[in-house]
Length: 170
Ligand code: FEO
Image (cartoon, rainbow, N blue to C red):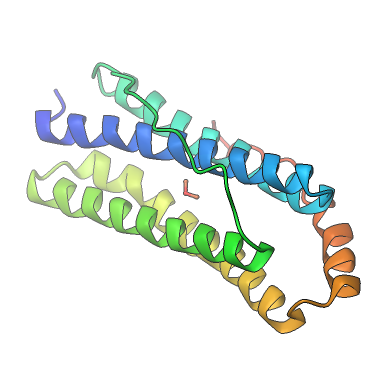
């Protein structure tokens, strides 16, 4: 039977990942409203990825014989600034989520839950990718500044982001 503290923390992560989806969906809606369809699409794909993350925790809890207790999802922000400010917020959010994953890993070690420790390894790698993706966007947007032509070009490129698929074996 899974440790009670571990179970509670895993349930909290379902909420964190679902909130992440909600946050990126709100950013997607904002971009669409502003006519930046490619940016909106990128955030839409990110939303789907976050739901895959939430589902992985959800499925794992059930697999370990625990109860999934879905919690309140807070409202995301609705008012956003420039694309650079939005992606800076996204990067900050991913750094926060990395901290949460690290806390889970430390708890798994503390309660000697080797199975959960093993399960979390995928998320450690995933967070490196998540931070890199948001960081790359921050770098690009910093580089182009307020140049509308370049923003238009990036918007076109971002519309090519593929639909995320759950990792093999899911
Ligand atoms: Fe699920 Fe973007 O971390």
